[in-house]
Each structure stands twice: as C-alpha cells, then as structure tokens.
Length: 79
Image (cartoon, rainbow, N blue to C red; front, top):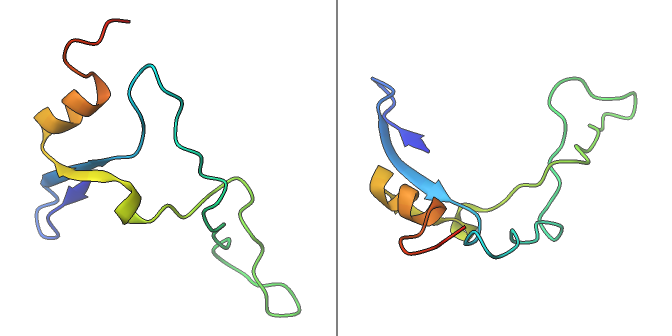
C-alpha cells in the first residue's frame, strides 16, 4: 500500500499473488536483501535468507480498495 507523506492517508494498493485456485507466484528468483544494522569484521552485512526483494513491477496496480478486493476475492469465484 502507498500513503501520502504528510497525513499518512492510504492512497493506493498493489497486489502480488494469484487467483484463489492458483498457487502463489514463485519468488525464489528474486534477490535476497541484506540485514540492516552492524557489519561483521570484514565490513560485510549478512544476507536475510528468508526474505526477497520483489520489484514493484511484479505487482498488479496501483489499485483502489475495490480493485484490491476484486483481486483478492474475484467476482464469480466459488470456494
């Protein structure tokens, strides 16, 4: 989700996923980010193994609240 800088009002949403009957997109190919904070003696930061940097271009959107609801719960889809 995105928000305004001054008032922190929600302005738009983005969706990374699939329809309810499909598996989630694979994120293994995306880059692993570095841990924030201190570096080791060699000046390197550790990698965050269980995290991925997913580019914003991989998300659907920008969406409104209604568009996000349709992406999460498609009309006509039965559980």
